[in-house]
Figure 1 (cartoon, rainbow, N blue to C red):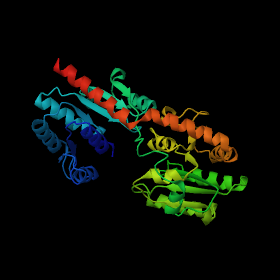
Figure 2: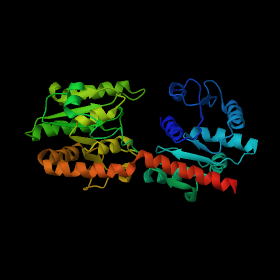
Figure 3: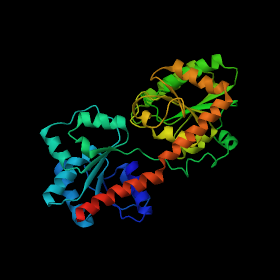
Figure 4: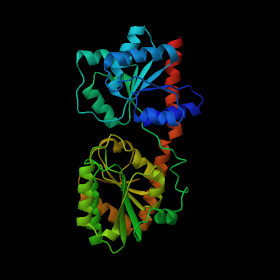
Length: 359
């Protein structure tokens, strides 16, 4: 829900913000709950392109934005058509957050993307993919990593013992965990397989925590993961925790954080764990290379390699000094991804375009 988060942060900075979204969407619901001005009409249920263009034109006339920041590629056609029909030169920015497997290089796409003034990608991995799959010009395409709220993800915010009790975690010497919705690419099976190996090789009593609900439409896969954990591990050494609004609480209870995703566009939860001063084992693939420095603030492993995950975790289990050293380095790295700096940089980009437009 980056659109809503950014909107709220900009409002806190004194900026006037208006969200344009689909009717009955989660975004509309949460925007209303949080008191952020919003208008529906963007690909509402049952509507097509031209009703959306009409709604967009109305919003542009009524709100008169100085800048437009689109967060979904699906919406670029609507906004670019509406701007052209109104003859508006309002700067249009777009953020690409995920890797795409679809090529968008038709004449129509070239027309749509030519109206965008700047493209932001959340990682260098995403930027490379974006340039390969769209007609975006390299000179207009930049990397802007996401930021983490360092006030929320603060290692001193909660007490570890209290969080262990709150989540009713198994009794253990060390807690090793991962977080994220249960989906085939998130690496839950690798984590469970690694946990089984660790239990066999370590004399320390370790417990394993997996935080996050099933992904939308993947309840069947989640049930498969629950069965796999039951087959591989004793019931008193692992715990699944469903959705929690404040991940910092769960992270507080952990000693070692594992990021086993097979291919991640960026990895917000990885930065959050690092900000909570956790020793990190991370699959080094995709956008993760924007975040960690292997061997300095994280131990890195190949994708889909549970044996490597287990060996890296065992290094931290068997060497408390090294675990502490990597946790300190992870905290230091996380502070380079401050959410406050992210918002300030975004505002500078906005102001630069508005200034150039006014000249």
